[in-house]
Image (cartoon, rainbow, N blue to C red):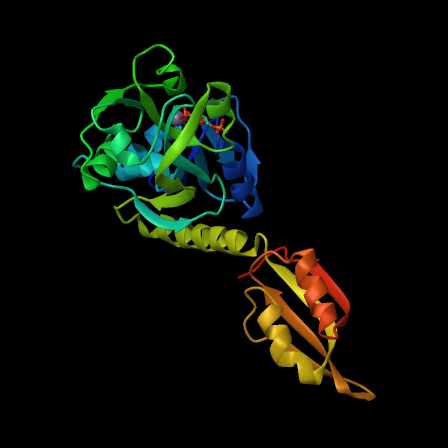
Amino acid sequence: MSAHPERLTLALQKSGRLAERSLELVREAGLSVVKSANELFFRVENYPVDLLRVRDDDIPTLVGDNVADLGVIGLNVLAEQSHGSGQRAEIVMPLGFGRCDLKIAIPESMEYGGIAALTGRRIATSYPNLLRKFLEERDIAAEIVEMRGAVEVAPRLKLAHAICDVVSTGATLEANGLRAVETVLKSEAVLVRSPVAPADIVKHLLDIVVERFRGVTASRGAKYVMMNAPRAMLGRISEILPGADAPTVVPLVGHDEMVAVHAVCQESVFWETLEQLKAVGASAILVLPIEKML
Ligand code: PRP
Ligand code: ZN
């Protein structure tokens, strides 16, 4: 049962990879977070929402068991735990941050001609379920050595020949003389919800919060682009604009052959894009950030 049946509870990682961006998402969604002396809870001032701050590994269970209504969690952690029985947290949407890969890595010195090189080897990991599935699907018989942390030191300690761990910048692998050879899972932060429908008062709030998260996520990276352009080049310009459907075209007084083009671009607008636009005759190009999108 939910901790506070009349309040919406959102589980977030307390510290680590996703912690800061998760809190940022909550704030950008208009929830004003009040830090409390309580380590476990943060309160939201302007809505009946509580933030439950926990270890990321606990989030799938807390949401699956409906202790929290929503949670922000790495797909890697969620997928690893989605094996056993019991109620499961359901994915609402990817959040576009916290990108990292679960990879198999081997010592620099080890030869590697392909995945068959792992046959009969010992692989240390904190992700035994995902690794087992990956190996089974490729018919590789290897031994999985389960470790809670510090997986990257296993080869040096002769505990294992290889490791399977999360890689983001690659600094940990490099510092330990390891190189990645296989990708087991591509991960990013996802929003999850409890499989149990909340009480009506909370349901309304949950829908609002989810839609705001969707808006924050969608507007991130999106840009509003304006320019003047030759009418004859409109087709080319729509092709160049990244992820823009149906730009708005406005006539320019006294210039029949020219128009103003306004478009929302869903993807990053790079300098190259602007240069291409200029090359087909666009001028006075403006790229503006979008704060909110609904
Ligand atoms: C992972 C992994 C490495 C590090 C890799 O741990 O176990 O230690 O991140 O990142 P890098 O490629 O940028 O060096 P994580 O921070 O996810 O900790 P956790 O598994 O204990 O939650
Ligand atoms: Zn963790």
